[in-house]
Image (cartoon, rainbow, N blue to C red):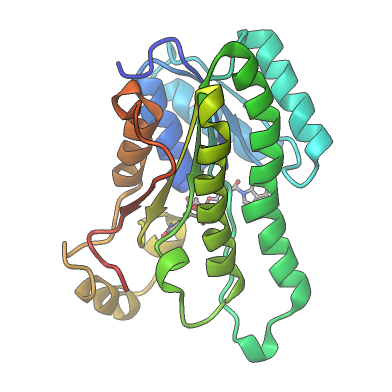
Length: 248
Ligand code: NAD
């Protein structure tokens, strides 16, 4: 049990990679508060987790991640209820594929608002609590496209490159407060979106991955578990690729 007695928040924790992180943390003894965008999806995730193991300490909230006040209020409620906040995982994210020639500035803004600004807001609120309690861990979900780009949809890789910059900078700024900051950069991962792709799309993709398969949400969650735990107590400012060596 690598996270016994730890209190963790996971944004975008209702499905896909976020839900796998929530489950991994619960299996390792943490109390987890998952954040989602709507009450219905939060309730659905909570009932599936309760069904798997009624003893797991899991609850949910749905603050608007574009509103710093709502986020700060949510974290202060968590501090009051649980007495601490040890781990924040900034995982919520959206992507979009669109050619540069037709790209709408408002879509770029929407992606940056969720994928980047929400990390700033949540990290601010969490770091205040962590500093006061003597330390903590902030983890961000990046993407391999932050390093290698992608052939359409310029906003998404731009947002994930910003995530890497935030990760490295906050690691340097918050180290003195005993707060470690790291990111995980997944390659193509088998969430609902990828599962829906036809064979004609997925097979050529797999052919580019040296380990011969797409990632599973659990592969990514294992990296988060390591970085959240004391096993990574001297690791900060790192962007850990989990992509089967598919670096292009
Ligand atoms: P997903 O679409 O299955 O899950 C996204 C999560 O973000 C959901 O829980 C959703 O509720 C939440 N979310 C979306 N919009 C939101 C909003 N406006 N406010 C609050 N929450 C919102 O996607 P996923 O594949 O599990 O992605 C999770 C993270 O992993 C994202 O940051 C994504 O960019 C990153 N990622 C995914 C892949 C992949 O191949 N699946 C690869 C690299 C990085």
